[in-house]
Image (cartoon, rainbow, N blue to C red):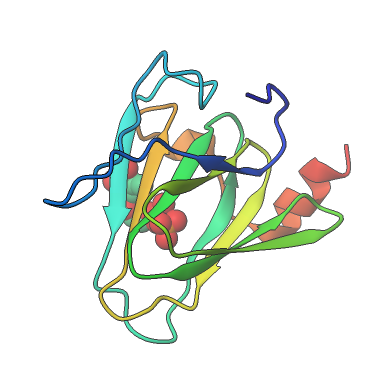
Amino acid sequence: MENNKEPRIVDLPRIYDPRGNLTFVENGQGLILFAIERVYWTYDVPAGESRGGHSHYEAEELIVATSGSFQVNLFDGREWRHYSLNLPYKGLYVPPGYWRTLDNFSSGSVCMVLTSATYSEDDYVRDFDEFIKLSAR
Ligand code: TYD
């Protein structure tokens, strides 16, 4: 387990089963270093559409492609990192302070996000210029 606050792909447990495989995330498991406070997911994303376009002051997230595929683009104010997610047993850890966009959604894809905080608009930076100013500090 890494304890730094850098983006990284997290390998989640896989319980193989001829009836169908199972993956789980729970608090105290040691895979992610935040307690899960909220789960949300996006679906029915039209082809060519993009989501995200913000950063968080404090919230940490684990993004999982529970179905289908999409790309997550992370920007720390200096460089972009791009992650293709298409496996339901891999999560992308996104620390606070990263601008993120999500695109290239496949038909029928589901983007599930586990996050460290309940929803608060106050935790969002939605203006890119403002994000650049904050990240330069
Ligand atoms: P937003 O975070 O902008 O979506 P995304 O980044 O995934 O494209 O949220 C879109 C709208 O949904 C916005 O009006 C806030 C609302 N929302 C909630 O009410 N609760 C939530 O947990 C989330 C993630 C969003």
